Length: 625
Image 1 (spheres, rainbow, N blue to C red):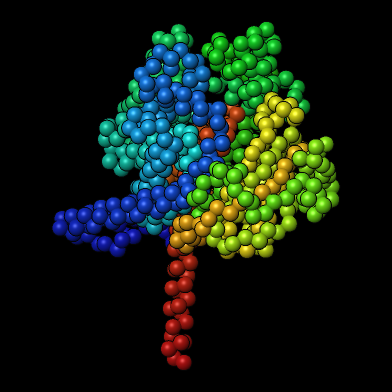
Image 2: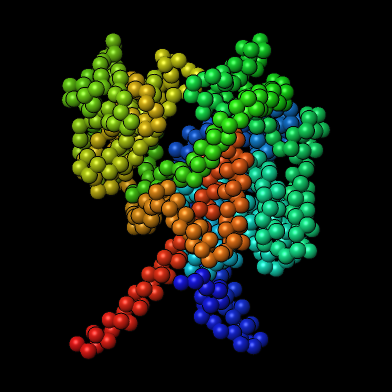
C-alpha cells in the first residue's frame, strides 16, 4: 500500500474554492485538536515519571547540577562578576544557568518548578514530532510518531533530570521542522527560524555546535536550484548570529577564541581512554583522574580540585593537543573507536518505566523515633540464611554491628535476601538501614515475596577516587507502597555493569509502617502507561526503525530519509569522537521513533488491506450458508 497524500488520508475531494477553504479549516481544526491531545498525553506520562523519580534524579550528576545551580544563584543575585570569574562555569554554555536564574526570580529555588518547565518543553517536543512527520507522511504515521514520543519512558525520565539535555532537544526538532516547512513554502524567515533554533540549542548544550552545516547538506535535496545558496548561507548566518554573543563574551573575558564552552579536551581524552583497555596511552578514564594526573605531572596541586579552576583554558587546549596526538599516531584504531561508539547511540537507555503503584506520600524522616514493625540485626540475618549466593561470604564485624558481605562474581545475582515480611496491602512503608559499599556496584530492591515483582529499587555506586575503607556510610531509606502484596523481601544484588565482586557492610535493617497509601486512583493510568512503555527497548524500536527506513527507500522517499537521518548522522560523525553519555545523544531516539512510526503505519495499513480483501472473499460463502 502506498503512502497516501495527506488530504487523501482524510477522505476529502476538494472541488472549487469553497471546498478547498472548508478542507483547510477542517484540517487545521483537526491538527490543533490532535496536537493538544498529544501534549496532554505526553505531559500526563511525564507527570507520572515526576511522581516516581523526582527524588531519585537529585542523586544524578550532583557535581554538574550543583555547578549549574551555583551559577544560576550568582546570576539571579546580580553577581555577574563572580559568575564570569569562575572558569568552572565555562565547562557548559550559560543558557541553562540563565534559565534557572529566571525561574529563581519567578518562583524561588524550586526543583519542582525546574522539572515542570522541562516537562512542558518535552511535551511540546512530542507535538513537534507529530507536526514534523505530518509535513512529510500521512496523518496516521504522524499520530503514531507523536504518541510514540509522548509515551517514551526515556524522554519522560530525562525531562525530570535537573540537567539541560531534554531542553536542548526541542530547538533541534524545531530547526528540522522549520527546514521542512521551508521546503514546502519557501520563505527566508522560516530558514532564519531554523538557524536560530540551532543556536538556541547551543546555548543550552554545546553538542549541536556543528549541526548547521549538516542541515545545509540537506538543502540541495529539499530545494530547487536558485534558492540553495541563499538559504544555506542564511541558515548558517542565523546560527552564528545567535551563538556569537557567547563567543564575543568569551574572547573579551578570557582573551581566547572559545565558540561556546570548554570541555572538548577532557571529553576527547576520556573518549580515548574508555576504549584503551590495555592503558597503553596512560590517559585516565575520569575527570578526577585527569586533574590528579595534571597536578602531578605539572607540579601544580591547585590543578587537582577542578578541571578548569586554574589555567583552565590552557589546560583544555593541552588536553585537545594530547588527544589529537594519539589520534594522529593511531588513526585506524580511533576510526574503529568512533564507529563502535556511534553504534551505541542507537541503544535506548534503560530507564525506569512508570511504576505499578503511586509513590510514597508520607515523609520518610523521623522514623528513628518510631517503633519498627519488623527488624533484623546483622547476626540474625546470617542465622536465617539471608546470604543467598553459595559463592558469597557473609560474616559479622568485630563489634557485631555490621554484616560484612563479599559477593560472588555473577552479573546481577542476589547476594542477600531477607526472609518474607508480612505487610498491610496498599500501605506506605520504608526500609531503613545503613550500608557502606566498599567495592563494586550494588542494586537494592524491595520485592513482592510471592510474585517477585519489584516495588522499588535503587543502585549504589562507589565515590570515585575514595579508598574502600573511606567510602561513605549511606543511611538508606527505601520507601515503597505495598499495593496488593501481603509479604515483601529486601534483596541486595550485584550491579550488572561491573564484574567486580561487591564488598559491603550492612547494618541493622528496620521496617516502618507510615500509613495508608494515597493516589491509588492512578493505578489504572499507570497500568496503561507501564504496559506501553515495556516495549521501549532497543530490540523492539531499532528493528521497526530499520523497517521504516527500508520502506521509505523502496518508495524512493529520499527527501524524507534525508530529513530523518541528518541529525543521527551528525551525532554519529561528530559526537562519536568524544566521550559520550546517553543523555548527550538521546535526541537520535526521536528520529528512530519517527522511522518506526512509518513502519507501524505501513504494516497496519497492509494488514488492514489484507483483512478487508479476505473478508470480501469469505463474505459470499458466509452469506450462502
